[in-house]
Image (cartoon, rainbow, N blue to C red):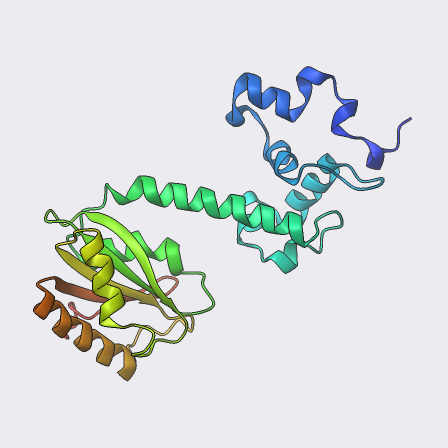
Length: 230
């Protein structure tokens, strides 16, 4: 009997191989293990790509957990080096961005909860602070969500020039500021308050209203507007 660890995709009848099945039936017909195998590409000595992809599923428990794993965690699986781990991360990130792009046009911003829903998936799991700019058209629909800075917020990282350059390029009529607090604490810092005032004042000069500044955590948010700070 053939050693299970040496079983390869080529041992399958050609019509049953993942690539051929994808071509015939579309990606939705493939299992998660088969899709992972296509991304990884090939196995290593005595460990096939199908075995590696199954080990990924077993180790992490779900495709969501695989997508959230770090490159270091993924590369602990024998047969997944840094390069293949990077490929996996890139594929999951593209899928996430596609989902976000499809959803953005449907968001009409009428309240801070709507902003939090639109932005949370961008930044809720980030280990560093990400400052986002939500660009809105005249109907309060999202045109674009741009990243202005990554790192602890300060006046040098979040400059009005960068913020309003994005708004002008995309012809936004108003903007909303948003950033995450990896600590889970929603209360704004003095730096948060100072940056908000600075950008709001700059927006008045530019004729582009800064409607709100939202601080996002995993399950909560803080709205400057709701709290009467704007």
